[in-house]
Length: 312
Image (cartoon, rainbow, N blue to C red; front, side, top):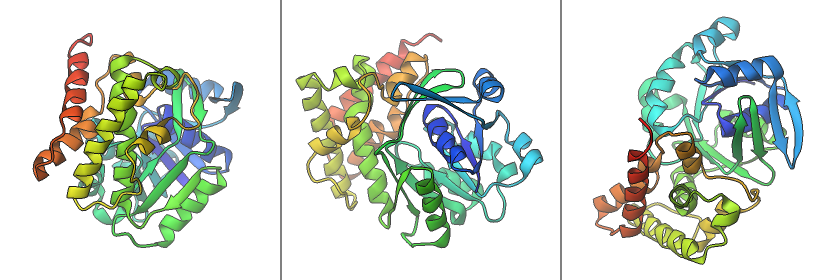
């Protein structure tokens, strides 16, 4: 397949890298010129279990360059930060063709509506991934794909040929892929995992190995997830989780001691986080249905305070 990863940071490069190794024509798009230059010059360095391997990849900062080189994509995987979704998909319109599928694997809620407004709802697929990645430097990442599943699906819950083709392509690249007929439930399942660790990792500045050694952190995480589950239930969402501790355990399963949640990675780079699309989404949806969310409100407040203190 011809695939563009829109927002090829650590996670996007991990997915794009293994898809490239499986024989697909993959373009990695990132706004960072140094990152793109490093991949063009040396290839993408993927570090897994302490072992480095270099993958020759296509990389660019501009989708117009891709359109000129190879035309429309079969699949665009959207992995930009939530607050960049609209700008990114509008910039990608030159590589959107009649049969292009646009798949959001972003964290949080609401991206599919933004994408549908730009390209048409019929082109949009939704999904969530538990694959991990950590940026070590320009063109260099740690990969966490082993045993990590990715869920994708049509917005209407149908089993289409295109979603099956995408799932087969992912599987051939070693990405465990599940086709979901309850994609909103799938999105909420992943949201619960993000709620469990994202803000707490950002606030404490702890990587997963240390985060999971603090009982008080676990108690706070489980309380935040329990609130989110109550909100999901009030919203009519069918979850696969029944115990609020399970998303906490799922979040760290199989990841290295030094792995850092995306919120912590953002703060360490001096960037704002996606908290408004994660814990903030729980708070907003809770208010809509009259469900109290004091733990998530507190986590959002703490992250907002940290963001306020970032260098401007």
